[in-house]
Image: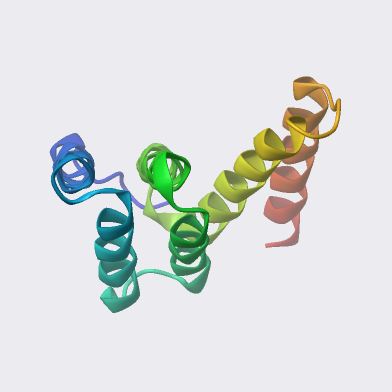
Length: 123
């Protein structure tokens, strides 16, 4: 597993997202973040897909997805960015699904954990 990025890099990224969100609005901030993610050749396709889904979701929810993706990516390190993107998207979709269907939060977390464990066993 690769080393984590310094926490300063994470804080700079979060500051950039929040500053652009407050200054230009959610759509422009998400467009900038998505554009930067696509141009970054070091990022795997899953991470880029997560940015595009955040752009499609838009608004405050898309910004929160990007921030969650940044924090989970920093927490897990750079070795498994695609897996981090998958987990962040699964959690986000699970939270969105809870609004429409009475699914317990514990079940969503357990399913996410099992998917994470299965992915690690397969790789």
